[in-house]
Image 1: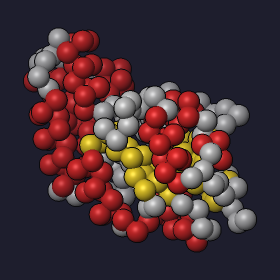
Image 2: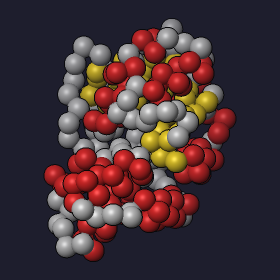
Image 3: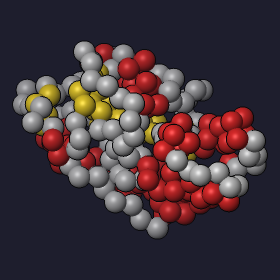
Image 4: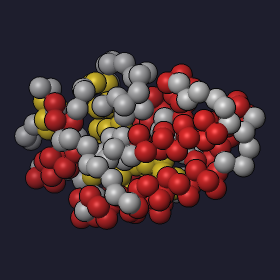
Length: 210
């Protein structure tokens, strides 16, 4: 089990990382493809993993000539999250270990604020010092802005932070911001590297003592 030195802050993605909503999101996307006679293969769905609603709507329009999808994606995904989400294995243990060590935690998500707030309530708002949702920064993931904003809100250098992500889109954002990365991939495309540790589950990693 990898033991990671406590960072200055823990910056956690939400969908697919802390809660199993990435599959719910991709279910909504897949259903829309099926309605238009397009098989939702893993290759077709891959660009939508970790994407914000506006980005997904643009992908539908630009790549598949399917327009007017944003409102439906928003409505159906929000309804699924409101009905209840499953916390990913090891997620609460990681969050509580960070609190035990005095490491502040930020939620950094490509989901809309209303979805983020639903999940924050379920996970426990007190587990997070701050949160950054879609629209809180000028640019979203894969740009570094959300992670840079979270680090700034906590008063720490992104280089001293550990980001936790599950998609290549989020991983690109975290690394571009200068963070170290703990990746728990839900889709292919994240490789281990000098600043990236890859595990199969959050149960397989430990934050060490100071």
